[in-house]
Length: 226
Length: 214
Image (cartoon, rainbow over all chains, first blue to last red; front, side, top):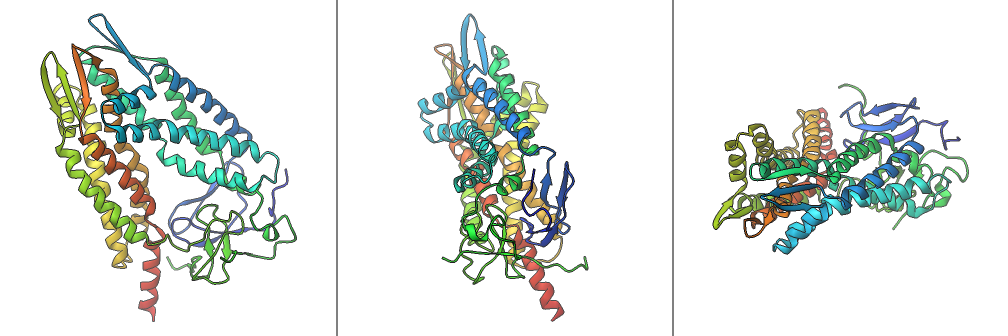
């Protein structure tokens, strides 16, 4: 695999303190930290394309199972009730808390679902570089979905609800619960193996003339003017 | 640290917030667009301090009804019972699951308060141009960013309690208006943390250090 501009040490600025630094060539499986503030400025996963793709596909399957099977069931004096994630948000809506229902649906469904979709699109599209410009847009969207995907918070919330209700009735965790646990683990694994820098290096530049693909790279690129 | 510390802004360069590419703008005051991803470039997040303050204040206002108004109303065999967030914690404690009560207390009471306090402190220290404990303040910012989502815990607890306990006429649980305000606090503080620019912590120090040497 030929990495673009691998010979030159790349100039980067720390995202959190703006310190300019040359990024050394990282051996696989290592990370680089900013010498001033300690922020992780870059990482070099051993297999930055195939592994996150496999994990994302697994996460997509687990996510679908988690959303279609009951999370937990409850029985009290012969009466049964069970709920899914969508069911939870729907009940909130019907009980008059529409805005809360929207927030729950976003954090539990839209954001993690969107993250999986965007990651799948990006990881598939960058396999044949150069990927078109819109792939960068997808990558950006995926990144902004990440803090709002609250799978692990939801799991803990469900567990607390289960224990609270266990006082009053018999509760049982459903298949959805286990699938959700798998989603949490897979999300963490995707984060650890996917490298946005690798993806960006395979995406077509907006200003094609500045791209390292076209012509030798004479130092820094120039920003476009408005 | 005595090493040469040159930031992108000092060198007249701009790092793209979206794709991290460092480029040289023709006019640093109006940096234009990233040549790689075409996003609008800005050296520091636009009006970061004002936006963050506005969101922190809005969240602090929401925090009051979030704690005073009930989050859950339980109807069981004719008796009606309303619970606030603290009421829910006490209920968990009284039923013997104190570890759980502690988790909910930390996530629902201490984390939102701590976040409001931490963000206010970061904003004030940047506005006053503090030069001390920059690394620690950056770490505090990272903690605020990471921990924010966990406050949503109570909203999920309430949602799934409501969804599951619908056994009319035996027992039913309805959400109260406090849930929305509480979710509001979490969302507003998360956006506040995102709009704060941690590079400002280091800018102030550089400028004051230069002033001291001059």
